Amino acid sequence: MAGFNKGGMGGGMQNLMKQAQKMQEEMQATEKLLDEWEIVGTAGGEAVVVYMNAKKVIDGIEIDKSVIDPDDEEMLEDLVMAAIMDGYKKADAVYQEKMGKFGAMGGMGGLL
Image (cartoon, rainbow, N blue to C red; front, side, top):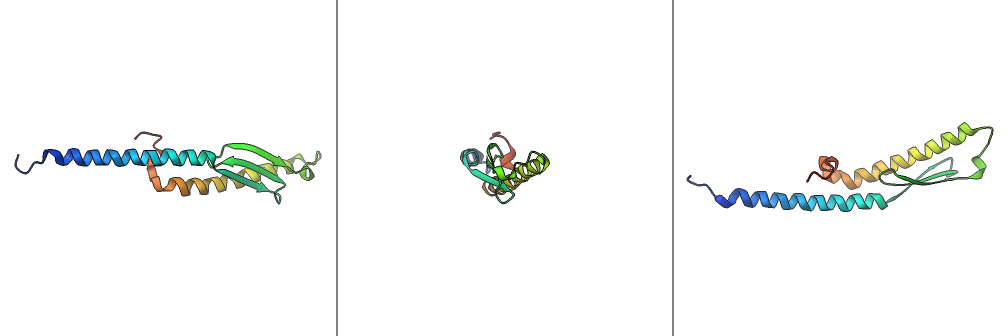
């Protein structure tokens, strides 16, 4: 065929694959960063503190004794939930900031 370049498609595809591999490596490094990122959620003026990573995996909770009232366990439950939700909101912001640049690729689960 006139004007057909045998190397034209192959070179472009190879370059595309290299770019995809580089992006996958960057995503993996970012995923590791998110695993190690410490998020602190608080409620009640830091009477309840929840520690988690940017993937919302909770690894600790601290509760000030001043908010432990055996006659009002519902208040403590609400404070714990509020601290978790505060942490989740912060984790969402970090996740979006770090993974947003990958767009839909971030949800592909390693298909590249």
